[in-house]
Image (cartoon, rainbow, N blue to C red):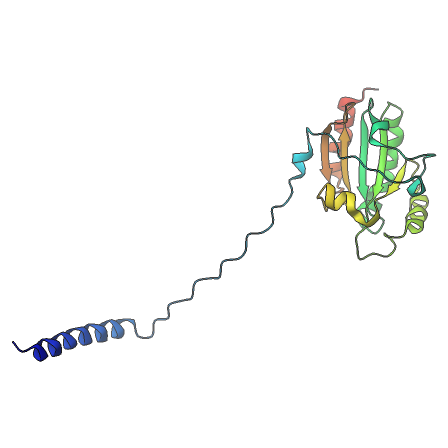
Length: 201
């Protein structure tokens, strides 16, 4: 058979096959695959703090109220201590304030120490103004030591946390034994139940 005939026959076969495929798939849209989203940054697990030494802070004497001098992590050693992170612009923190004052009075009488750290959000001028913070602490009637985490660096960068209020309880060796964020009746009860279990009357 002549070569040109072979070429024509093959062309017809492939042409008819291609037409058949086109006919069967006409009008069918093959969707583009969804673009793969970049992997999200890992969210810090607050539970990872439990069982580890608490990260220390170093606020100057000018950024403390209700304490004649700065309270360091070393000052808390030998006592069960409650550390609260809060913001004056946080409605849940304001709601928690009377409860936290009661906790301080009740368990302070049993030997618990307490420190509150106001860690501001970047967009709130009042939270970033230490004088405004001191005024709010007085308005809320807080009597325990309160300090100021300038720029939120301790809470956001070292602790890698973002929910307010956050309650942390450390044991006498400075190890985190309890962690809870938010303020609800359930979380309040969980905190007092835990404190009752480690601080007997």
